[in-house]
Image (cartoon, rainbow, N blue to C red; front, top):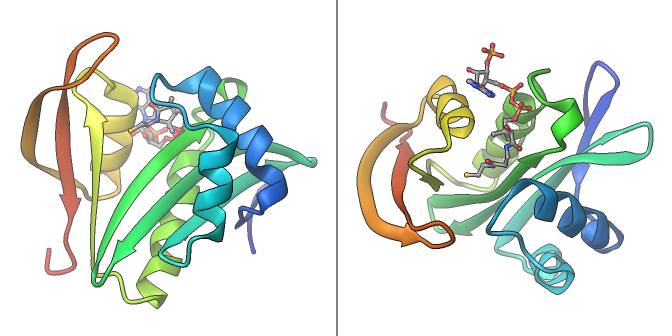
Length: 152
Ligand SMILES: CC(C)(COP(=O)(O)OP(=O)(O)OC[C@H]1O[C@@H](n2cnc3c(N)ncnc32)[C@H](O)[C@@H]1OP(=O)(O)O)[C@@H](O)C(=O)NCCC(=O)NCCS
């Protein structure tokens, strides 16, 4: 468990799944169901964190490990809590914990028009390595494939 100002970062529990799904639905067009979050929390290859303030879930993120690679997903911070450093601190903590489990290289996909998220990932040291044309629907949009590699 790690703290930044009044925000706590901790492992997601099954009981957080409804709040995480609700918050992600308000933030993202690729939101997961409650059941998907429950499965993720139970899966030993996944590591999910929440940001909590005064007992309320205000952020979430997760990583799926495959040997030395970690695929980050479900990154979201509640609208009223943005631009306070929560997303950056939450992802920094996620990557710190993932490194302890042996992850060396991190990757993620982001909509090409999602400037806030792209700026955040660049600040954390991610670089674009590829594009998946028309990967997203509703609206149709390219996915940028970003990596943060241990050697860099
Ligand atoms: C992307 C998101 C998680 C960022 O969370 P956040 O807590 O607001 O981010 P932080 O406050 O930690 O910002 C860290 C850095 O990211 C960049 N950043 C964040 N939001 C930004 C914005 N709206 N415009 C430009 N840069 C932004 C800045 O570099 C910022 O550093 P600074 O404040 O020192 O300039 C949040 O906007 C969100 O939940 N968006 C909707 C869901 C989403 O798009 N998720 C990503 C899917 S891939």
